[in-house]
Amino acid sequence: MKAVLMDGFGGLEVLKVGETDKPSPQEGQVLVKVVATSVNRPDLVQREGKYPPPPGDSEILGLEVSGTIAELGPGVAGWAVGDRVISLVGGGGYAEYAVAYASHLMRIPDSLSFEEAACICESYITAFLNVFMIGDFQDGQTAILHGGGGGVNTAAVQLCRALTPNSRLIVTAHPSKMERVSDLGADLVINYLENPDFTDIVKEYTGKKGVNLILDHVGAKYLAPNMNSLGYKGKLVIIGVISGIKAELNLALMMVKRQQIIGSVLRSRPVPEKAEIVAEFTRRALPKFADRTIVPIIEKAFSIENVVDAHRMMEEDKHFGKIVVKIT
Image (cartoon, rainbow, N blue to C red; front, side, top):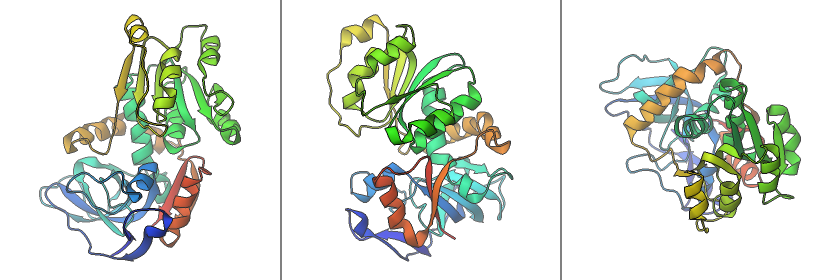
């Protein structure tokens, strides 16, 4: 099969399109004929040799697939060859065929194209898991969502607007993306270049009460302002550490305000745990895609032959929403 392969680890130059063996579905798995996938930041980190796939998963890049079922593995029921599906995968999305666990599959709503569907699993499930399942975000509450314009951030804004329409959303963003973030549904957009410490702005906006939830992928640089911006019993959910992994923490403030800091990753979770997350997402969020209350935001769709350009766009942070790679 055709796939994006890597000549070692490193920059864009290690990516190449070539031929490799087609995988075979094992117990509880299906083989998906991939129509489209999307580029996620962990793909870049894996390309650099810093984020290996979980044991047993494909070494090929790609954390989500959109396509049709080509083959059923042993023990799979409730699915048929030809079904339109999307799925999280531990790896292997940048290829013509990928294996996925049947328990991780979702049916693509008729209203969505394969390219739109390819945007859902990694970013929207990540946002849903951390904002709603872990963060227990409720309608009427206030959240800070860092990284305005990225896939997870735009997904989080859209999910909050659809599932908690009376919530208040504070988003930090690059000045070039602030207007689009506001149009997407943010109530307050903060220019993070001008305001690396956003504490005073948040306190003024919330009447010194602070926020209920913060979704953060920045890490060390934002720990102090995050904790200062959290309200009583607020939760900081950390899903990335692009600014570093070490920072000082005011334990007294955390104790007095009964705050929580929660670390979270999706890729390395056990198969049954991912299945539970997918099931809850299917129940609560997927109907919002079916009726197009939520429409995935695609910055650009590249052919598999132009995967280098897709990675370059993400590296340069020029995208808003998702970057799609069309496989077939």
